[in-house]
Structure formats: C-alpha cells, structure tokens
Image 1 (cartoon, rainbow, N blue to C red):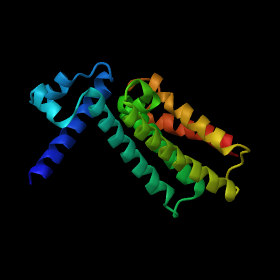
Image 2: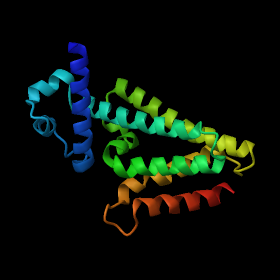
Image 3: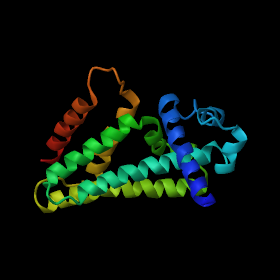
Length: 193
C-alpha cells in the first residue's frame, strides 16, 4: 500500500512538473516551484527525486514513452494505408512538439541536461522513437507508396523539420496546430513521391 502511494505521489509530481516546464521552460522551472504547486516542502520533493535533473529526466521519459505509444498504435493499424499512417504519425509528433513543447524539447540537447547514465537511456528512447518513422518509411518503399534513395536521411529531414516547430510556434500565431500539421504533411508527402 505504501509503495502504491509513493508511486502515485511520484506520478502526480511528474505531471505537475511537466505543466510547469511547458509553461516556464527548463531553466525557469525550480524545485521550489514544483513543490509549491503541490503544496509540498522542497525537502519532501527530494524524497522522490535526487535533483532537478532527475525530475526532468522522468518528465522527459514519460512524455517520450506516451508519444511512442501513440506512434506504435498508428504504425500497427493496418486498417490505415501506409500514407495515412505516416500522416497520423506526423500529426502526433507535431502535437507533442506543440503541446509538450518544453519537455519534448529536452530530447534535443540531452547531453546538456542529464547525467551520463540518464543520457544513455534518453538516447535509447530517442532512437526507438525515430525507428517508428524508419519502419513506416520502409513499408512505404516496399509497397511503392514512397520513393526515396536514402530513407534514413529522409527520416532525419522529416523529424528535424518537425522538431524546429518548438523554436518558432506561438499559440496565438498565424497558423493553428491543425494548419501546421496539414501543411507539414503536404510538404512531406511531396518529398516522398
């Protein structure tokens, strides 16, 4: 019972920290602020997490694993065409890039934020994430839905372009999330055919 309670408390802290990081950015988030949001003492927070890096690592891992689950669900949905699956995967990535922008952005520069042990796991999760795109591109080449000489370079181009959204997106900007998703897909589709 005590283990379950501790697990639930950790989960609540992580979810709260994710909201704060997305609102204030990595450098603007403090352990004090996370503790205050949950009406905890800073010392109590250190019972669950060694330091800010540990907490941010957990936040990043949770968001990345959720995104992977969403990608996997679409990748395995054989009721959708190959193109439709990739389109949905692009939409999912852009959703996370916008809605979880700061936490999702932590994978862009993990060596600056995480310990060597954490870095290894983050890079592994990042590689697994990219592999979902590799798989759908390979299926598309196999079915002749996609035409590319270098699928790995294409995947890097697609993910790199979508990751840049985090740098310029503004919630009240000239394009909505749906418009950005559709425009990116239109450009990506031109690259693939």
